Image (cartoon, rainbow, N blue to C red; front, top):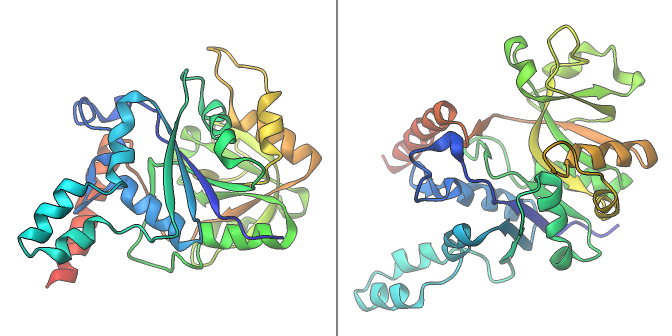
Length: 294
């Protein structure tokens, strides 16, 4: 099977958890250290072999697309002042990588946002990266771990992949929790595999369960690798309360017919869409970058 080279990044959310910072600046462009949060997400995708990135947004998010474009006037001014290195650092996308944006139209949920990318994705299988979730770029190997591992696993068995990680007992109720296939349902050691990626069949997901009802402590991280068939399931997914099309409903249908695997995450991740987690991440990223400059 051909390796996945397309990815969808939904950026249509208004970032209310990040107010007032996100009032006039898209939350995806808020800095983590010396770069916007979405910069690291796109770098991760490129390291994993992605060549075509589709941003799904709306009119107020055009600044994100602009960030990945070349500002010719600024480029010329910098080079006229002999600041070629700085100019080059702003135009960092490889020549064989494209970033485009498509409008979601109506805010009808994550499933609807993914479906909105179909005109550009076409018949290709693809990855989905949620921009609120930033994986630690300072540890591990983005060319082999996590998303890259999931893409390679998909190429071997054609099973869609969902990244998960172990959460603390007190945080289980905040996430979608994986219910593993019966073969692995009593394998408690799966929860503790943080140093290597591992892939397991999943039977389904329980949305924000109590600790007593949770089938595991493996929470969805925000990285997916899908076969193109997910689009057909999204088209046929009925809107939930509030009129939203839920990605999880389409995933459940995909599990029942084709099978889906979860991949345990290697390393750490940060929720850049939550104020407390964002501030902790900013400090960590800044410390790492300052240490590199010493």
